[in-house]
Amino acid sequence: MSSPPIAQIVALLGRKWLMRVIWELRGDPLSFRQLQQACGDISPTVLNQRIKDLVATGLVERQADGYALTAFGRDLLEVYKPLSEWAGRWVEATGGYP
Image 1 (cartoon, rainbow, N blue to C red):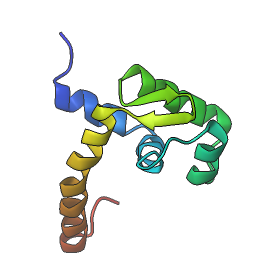
Image 2: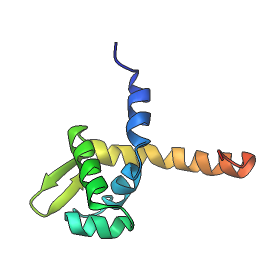
Image 3: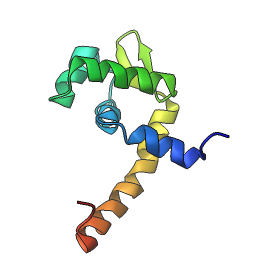
Image 4: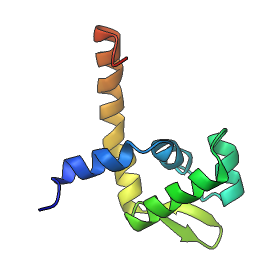
């Protein structure tokens, strides 16, 4: 039996650097080098693996001019906005998770 869908997406999004890669792809497509520069300290090996993860899960696609979010990836950013706002209120009220 597979995990519930919410558990699957939480496990995916919990991978180090994954949400940062998604965030950096919120605009125009980026080449590997541009994406690495946008992410800062990410190693090429980790970035390559995160891109593979995101392509395999249908959130990112390779286009002629670089990597871009798919419709699912763009939808995820829209879903993420209220969660981010909620998380801000939660951290402010409780101090968050150490």
